[in-house]
Image (tube, rainbow, N blue to C red; front, side):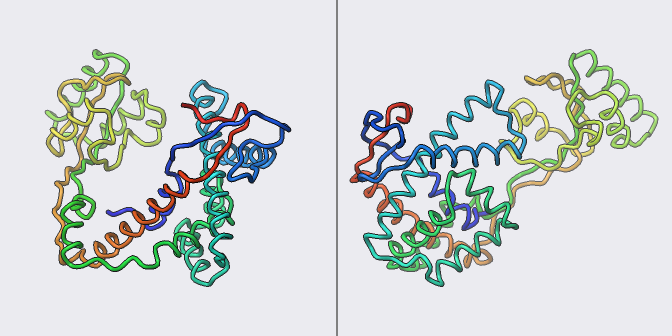
Length: 322
């Protein structure tokens, strides 16, 4: 379905924009300046530490090569979020806006509700390198800049629907189990065992799950029995996806499926075709989505211009990667 309003808000906040300017470190205390206002290193370091802790709590390890690379990206993104936050703070002051307006509080409360808990809301802010006041500033400026956007005409709603039809239907999906083996011979042995059970009129899925628990090298297979749940196209590696979507429901693969992970034996439990949405049934949602996109587009144009006109300086060692 169409992404949530929260997704749109976070999506705009995460846009990576072209940066300008560079300066050498003068006093060792600022990482960047936005129209002459400093982003202090101590504040930046604290924001990075919060983001890093949140990711670590979710299982990310920063002492691996992949983790070190991810940390470099996180540091860059945090500084960009802080620069964007500084620009929005300045704009709130320039336009003399009230961030404590009841409509802004309502929007923030909606985001918190959608996140589920205050802890998840704070984790979201930490991951984006944002503070709660910066979120309020964004909502305030966004509301002001998009206040004159009109509701779309019926023809515009219809055009939006045709362009984004896939977002409102149900994509094709498969529900499957698999057994992952190191070698092709091991996979063939599993298939032979399943074929013999089939000849003996034995129920295949319970046996498949038991074999997955005993033989699969996939982490977690001992608990899941190889259950992959339901997935749509684009969620699995190509070789696996092609085989799973081509296989008949209630059958197992009769030849091993090779991927970068090893050799798979697949059992397809269900295959649901894509459904085409009925415009009349989703028109209300489509109208709201088209309206939101029009507002997002206007705000992004405004913010791009604001960023382009800003004087942004980076201390030595804090410049974004070119």
